[in-house]
Amino acid sequence: MDTVILESCHSTWVFDSARMRFCRILKGIEFAKRSVSTEWRPYWDLEINPGDETFTVYLNATRTRVIRSWRHTKDCVQCGGHETTELSLEDIRHAVHV
Image (cartoon, rainbow, N blue to C red; front, side, top):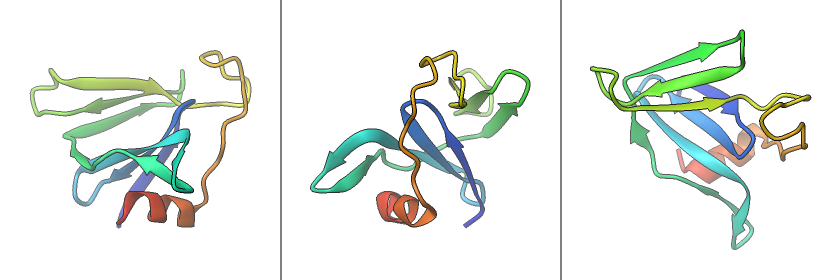
């Protein structure tokens, strides 16, 4: 699987670029000792802006349905730099049921 993994303050975003789908693993939420993830959703395009740590997920070809978020950083202005839990690749595979 060709993947792009982005960390935001509240989620780990997993983009399967070969199948043009994504899901999120929610941070700080577990059920039966397992991370909680969203269902896989299709997307049209992903733009990552390294200048301001934002990214945009375009959900359709006309780019009228979008999700915008930001990447979590050490001195994050969005959450005040609070540490978030990092997931290993094995944790990600287990959470998204690839």
